[in-house]
Image: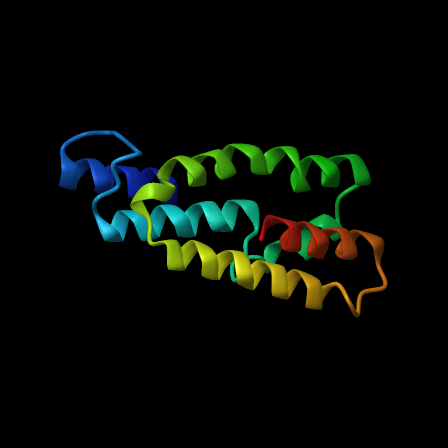
Length: 121
């Protein structure tokens, strides 16, 4: 819903549905926040360890790998219109939180979740 709202806001401001032309800063921030939530980037990663803990390993594998490809492709396509400092901050936070979060875990699926968060950084 956030991705759709961000694209509608961008279309309203620019007059076109082109996602590579994100000239509106509000729409750019909303699309990055929505995609970061979708792939589990820090600081929007809080759902991922608990969800992966409740899934079986095959479903967890799909959630932590294949499901992240499409949002990552959208981030790469919209990256020229987005502030590089924001993307660098999200990547650095994900790497640090994923590394530190996995240190004190004893459950395999939570360790895998924090590893996935760190790898997305």
